[in-house]
Amino acid sequence: MKQVMALTTYEQLKAISDPLRAEIIMKLVETSYTGQQLAVMLEISRPKIHYHLKELEKNSLIEVIRTEEKNGIVQKFYRATARGFYPSEKLLPYAEVLSESTRQLFVQMANKTKTAILSAPESTFAKAAGSTDPKDWEAIGSIWEISATEADFKAFTQGLFDLMQKLRQKSDAAEKDPNGKLYYFSAFGFEIDEPSFDQVDLNEEE
Image 1 (tube, rainbow, N blue to C red):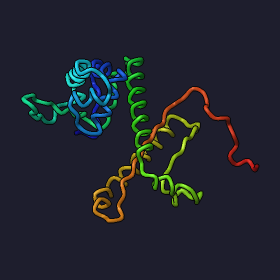
Image 2: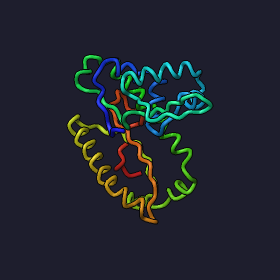
Image 3: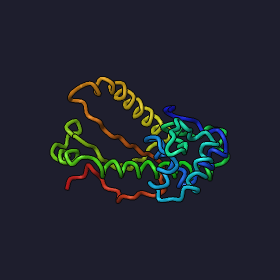
């Protein structure tokens, strides 16, 4: 599986803009499933699931990674072809479809984050109280609205990914360390039209 994959055709863009297909892709980023398993999980008929799987496979967004025979029936296990997808510049003329496909992927990532939060052990959040110093925190959860130039936003995004890459490089060693733990990170950042919080001067004395 690739880390990221460029979407280069309008057909790929259309395929991934469907909410159900976006949900299927996110499931197949996590692990491999058969059409039957996805049908049960998503409470959708097998013919409908197989139709969408064929469309995603036809557009190289998912692939069959192995087959197993069960009761004389060959089962196909599907997996997403990449952990993440981004549109190439040639798709910029299709702004409306491009916007919706990205929106649907963000929605599915948010749903995945919600599931991770709800299934995390109690100890994760039991340690969240205490110090106001971020270096002492056992978990982080923040929502920010910040005015910035497009250049500043892009520079920050690059810095954030550089930080994550540094942490990822330590992952193999941490897996072998008896004190190593598994952490879940989720990040969203995008332009909005109107503020969703009242504007407050955080430096103002109460």
